[in-house]
Amino acid sequence: MTQDLVHIEHRGAVTIVALNRPDALNALSRALSAQIASAFAELAERPETRVAILTGKGRAFCAGMDLKELSSGESGLQAADEEQGAGHRRFGMAAFPGPVIAAINGFAITGGLELALCCDIRIAARGAKFADTHARVGVIPGGRMSALLSRLIGLGRAKAMSLSGNAIDAETAERWGLVNQVVEPEALLAEALALAEAIAANDPGVVRRYNALIEENFGLNYAQAVDNEHLRSREANQRFDRGRVDPATIAERAR
Image 1 (spheres, rainbow, N blue to C red):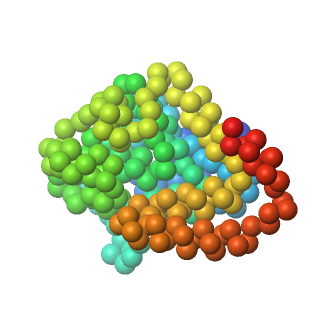
Image 2 (image 1 turned 90 degrees about the vertical axis):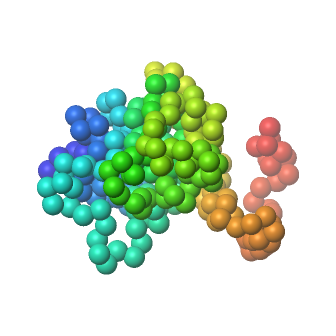
């Protein structure tokens, strides 16, 4: 890599992945996008990492696609033969089987908001801003925006955000269900790490399967989700070695 556009820090079972284009508000250039995908592909080969935290250096989480690069003709939004787009690939995060927590330190705009949406859990610093400006720049989204935003915050709110391009603050994002929690900027990483470590302390195989099941069932209706949970539970629990964990240990972990 000619430039370190993604900074990686391993902290035991948790890895912090930080976008490192602060002068460009961490805009998604082709090079940065490739390094994000490469970072999560490498984490997939690192069994020590059970949970990842995605954040940004500087005053932005991510300001979206690099419009200067796009306007120069150097890069397209999506290759003509690309069948699995950014939303399916989660901007490369799909390669990593563990949960990803977004620690949103500042602006999360358009493609940057999609990047946050593709994370499993979102914690925002007070002062962060969120906007979908696809309509303003004349682009149809391809990173889960139209599919997921309305499911998180409701149809009317999603349409108001996406069709106007207007921004909302972190407190509104929390109230609407776009982010899980709002904290002071200086506490952001500590809060994300505390949650990541709590997740990492659990059985990693169960965490991965349970996370996938929640995601899978989110796209089903209630009856389908109940049936699917029963099927997945039966498949998984029939393989569970009950002698491996005694009831007292299970009870202690539940406290």
